[in-house]
Length: 96
Image (tube, helix red, strand yellow):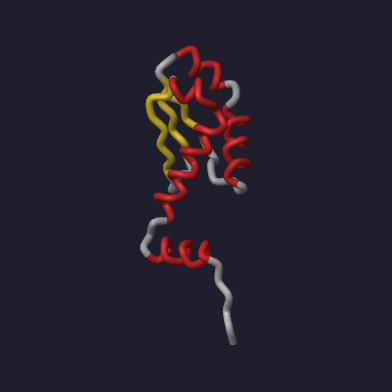
């Protein structure tokens, strides 16, 4: 019986085998945040960190007024990030 695999399947299997899943997921979530909020907000963002264990995205902003404004859009941001990822990865967004 012959199995056909794509390069993506083989790479994904290798990454899982060597426990790189979390690193890749973290990178994808952090990039999705940048894509969703745009260049202006990215410039005002000090740090972005995703914890795959708690499914929490922590974002440190340099402008308190921006933090206040984004607080009202937390649910929309989570939805947009998850849509960009094609699955519900982020469950909580913490703005610092």
